[in-house]
Amino acid sequence: MEKVALSKEDNFWLELFRFLAVGLYGTLIDYIVEVWCTSLFSSWISGNDSHFIAFIIQFLISLIGFVVATPSTWSLSAIWAFKNKGDQNETKSIKGAFKFTGFAFLGLLGGALIQLLGYMVCLEWSGLNINILDIDFSTLFNSSINVFLAFTIVFVFKTGFTTIFNYVTRKFILYKAKK
Image (cartoon, rainbow, N blue to C red; front, side, top):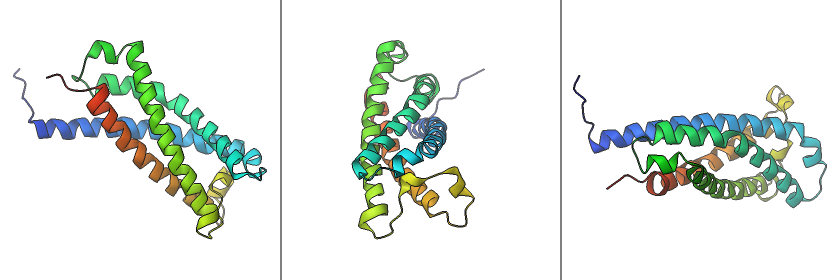
């Protein structure tokens, strides 16, 4: 059976599709863990008068989602999303996992900054007075779903940033094509 060679452009779109599929999988895990943990710890968050402390608690919750989602996204990225790229032995090694996690953590920090800005916009700066950290599974079925919608919108912006950051670091640093 003869292998059909894909053009560079076709290969790019296929790689991007695989990256986005892996990212969607990781994002769903992260989102479910974050909503669940935020709901679980909502009394700690909303019972705190300091926006900074409440946000630190939320960041720690994001870190839980990150820790849960990262192993599967690393393995799927190395095996499937960026297959035939870079030094396969290194990218699938412990060293490769640490590099992957380090860059992903930088993306997490950038996403946390966006989430902090979204938090302040929704709660203070826009006059909406919506605390996205008050999300609870009960808000999904309430007549007022503003908290859920605001949380989701901020999550989408945060995810958009981290998706672009992760693709660039993986494409051009971690899984750089061999010359």
